[in-house]
Image (cartoon, rainbow, N blue to C red; front, top):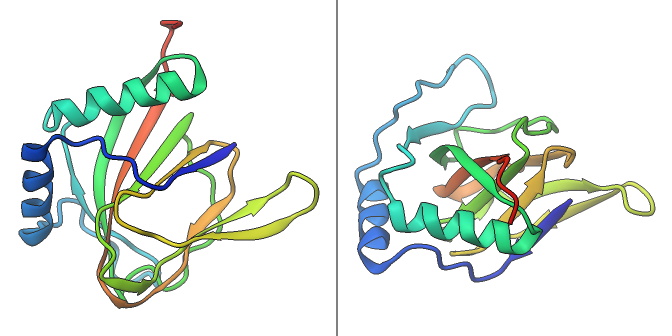
Length: 165
């Protein structure tokens, strides 16, 4: 299952300012393997670092799908022309993944996925600020190369909770 929210505003004003400061002062916390053609630079974020965002994201997901999820991992991906040149199709291991685009000062970098509803079709999602892509673990996808600029996205991995709404 996949769904797209065009304007998902989950941050309060202070968190949005802090998030953009993180982008301006981006620090790679997960060292990429530079010998590979495909890598992301990642800045890991503690799930308690943005409490309003986390609460809003979990509430939104629970209201949308009807049951609770736990947010376990969260980071910012930084993709440039030098990174992610050959992303292979893959599936995430989380029950639900959210990719929230934080900027739009780049070209390329579309989210591409395979739609199996009636026949196999390749579909693209063009990134935009506050656009969010939600996908379950069965969605086969990849990120196309960035042609110019820097693409920042907040990636969140949710797992089903035992609490039922």
